[in-house]
Length: 344
Ligand code: FA5
Image (cartoon, rainbow, N blue to C red; front, side):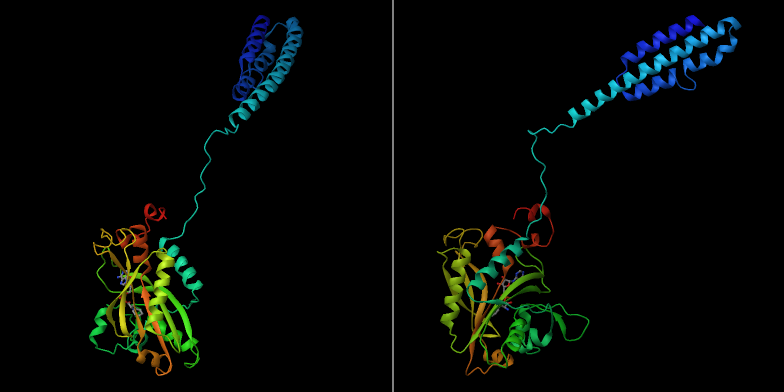
């Protein structure tokens, strides 16, 4: 047994020398010094020895146990230092690695267009007037000179609500009546506003037409506002929005709430009027409907049409954004596809 003790001692020391990790260290401690460890078992088995051998063996075994415990301590210290050094090394920052990108949100292309529109029209003296999305039939049609059963109602396919007389506005024009009534002080004050907002039409969805889209309405009311003011204002806007060389043209058209009425075209800024896919080889792009506010509409807004006049226009920001960026299909706008949105 004496011999076995010395052998175990030497072997344990040798094993200890090779240990590199705290896991292996813990294992070694259990195997040698633990409650069921080799040395402990030998100390317990002392009774099997002849009486005269017991004292010497016991003394030596205790000595060996203490020596091994000391050896264990110093090895543990070494292993710990080693592991710390290694983890520091592994955790070192590699300054040559590319940085991690922090994803940031962006503004929707329509929002970007709106901000630009607000800035330009703001610079030109127009304030934002917000009107409601859910409108009365009366505001959306009747007060805009579109009586019930009038065929002009077919120009705007309507979403009706379950409340009689309440609809989703088909255009931002009902805001004209609200602006005149709220800001006009009984038809005594001039007005210069833009009315942005969502419009809804019960329409077939196509690459150019959504059933939900924005409009930006403009309204100017004053004592001597003439058609030349409308033309000059819109031309100035087009130059600020599309560039100093933008050319504008006006085509006669029809809206029940303006007289005369017109469509406004801008010379295609992609092809410079030469004709291309975007302008459908016409050289011109339609950007808005407009006209001089109809006397009936002025009256409905509280103004005396013999004393006051005004112009109005309604543009489509999605269509303007499509033209600006060469977007082929309006359905991308509300499809929430990040691959589309991240391009802006
Ligand atoms: C109107 O809605 C008139 N209220 C505009 C107006 C205002 C005329 C003031 C005179 C005075 P229109 O239906 O053409 O007109 O629509 C105006 C613009 O809204 C169009 O030029 C287009 O840019 C946009 N728009 C109309 N329908 C859709 C649709 N389904 N999808 C996307 N944009 C549309």
